[in-house]
Image (cartoon, rainbow, N blue to C red; front, side, top):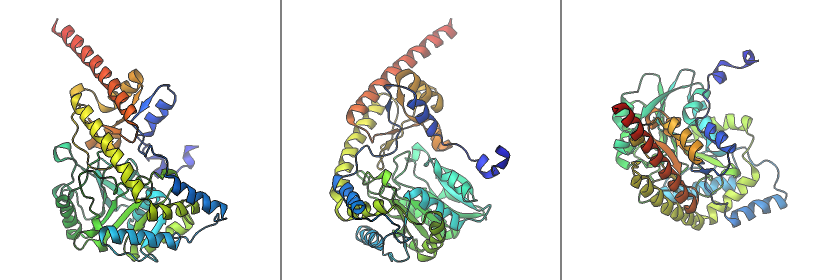
Length: 398
């Protein structure tokens, strides 16, 4: 039957994350630090508003672009937070999560063969969605030596005449890196020099620790060439409600709307009602969850470093990205052995791009009890591995 399938779909790589979830699902007593979503339940008052909308019969479509009240609230919150002004009527588009938003942004920009500079490590969908939209991903590596900050030089070295856009995702999944203003200005300079659009996925914008999040469109002369993606999933613990949004100049959002209206019709009505409640009254919930994540962040990073798995300090999202260099193991082999031997699920860094090789992603969107147990199992695994290495070394010496 494969002869009926398009070549582009057949060539699309499978998710490097899903495989480990599938294995873990067949096992008992698994502690997972692999899931990239909040472990908090959506705050009760937000849930109540979603239920209220259902009981009041709000079960039809909204405006294709999203309920105007929600778009206005998004625009008002962005102006309050960043000083950016977007017209709710044609510069804000409500989408089914950031995944749809990213696909729309890429689809309206790319003709077949156009290139997108994709900064990595990055979410597993980024390169795949570039390909799905008809473009060619050009991967731009970052490194732990630079706290996974992309530089202008790294971008410049990969720009060709086919380059159309730069795709950023900071605060970053999987590393937890937050791009500094200095590095953002370097990105902006490359974008201006080569007339590139910047797509900035800022879904983790509210989850930063000891750092400031800078909306890319606030940089000098960048508003007109920036497509900013965000949403409700991470900050408000609303992953299942599936509400994302785009803010960008009207020519971009109006083009995205053309596809969105045929592909989606409108984002879930109940999710939009709950999102309006969250934006208006959920700031205390965001801050409470952010403080809890910060405590867990310190706990897990300290734990990794004490075990010898060097981990730079993540300043955003809810991920740590320790190096497994001391084990001498490939990151995929490490994660498979750890899962089989200790029932502990981490994600190999190479699932997020070549510059993630030799690292593993650990989500601290889980309880402190789970983090302590994960570190205990990890320590036991490392002790066993060191013992094996010593025996093998002794055998070779003999």
